[in-house]
Length: 388
Ligand SMILES: [Zn+2]
Image (cartoon, rainbow, N blue to C red; front, side, top):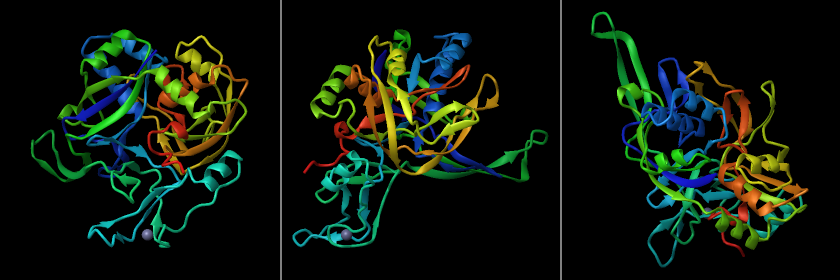
């Protein structure tokens, strides 16, 4: 299986509603869900006659194409869902030398008290004050944040640009507007860029993605909404990631590891019973899914810190049925604590888990990907903060 980081650019306004209301759709998601993106890629490959309809269906129900959620890019900066151990002070801090007002933001998970408590399985202390004693601090979790380039700010909040639109319902019969048929939409403004991870065992699909595949995402695509292009593809070296994990010293059996989750978490027994996060993940199966012939052990998740959220698996276009909805699952940006037993190649299994998570078979013909994406926080580009 090959893995890559992909940049997606929206070419027209895009509608990915958070919920349906009486007259239209309200609320715009701040990311592109993995389900939407994976479906759009498969549909596009089929529409452009690179694969047959049968193949599109069969890949949809297999592990051959794994896609994550796509999060907003702010210029050069990748954004990430914030975790619970970060705060922002709402009172501006005025620097005596500079006239500029800054808003202190801190990532405090790496502080000795917090990290050690988490590693020992104890609930860590939360911060309720900033460094100047202001109690007016807020926790952005799970809103998207990015690295900051200013002194007192460790991170910056970012947002998707959204615009409200109202359209008038047109009568089919009379070709005039109908009274009382106003539809409200929140749309993502075009020209915004997102990033995601993709893993695929199909070289032909990898090449198509790499050559700038155009896709259509969200609602209203027949009216020109949701046109996007996969613009830039960067292949990810598993070896580099494995090296990082080895150097970090966290990929060790039987010791607690602190994980950051780039995706929501979920465990399913069958459709009637599911858990807000997996209690055990069989990493051998993940190695198998990724085509690696090595043993990996079991990851037991003991505790999760984060908000609950509702997870919609979208719409099955071929079967024309709504896929399941899971309430109160651990949100993206959650922090999990767990340890590995019976480990084999622990660094490699953790690299795969970070990149593509632990996909879940929802039904005979549907795999939920971009779920349970757990990264040991010490190898995270910035959410670990500065080590002291
Ligand atoms: Zn303050």
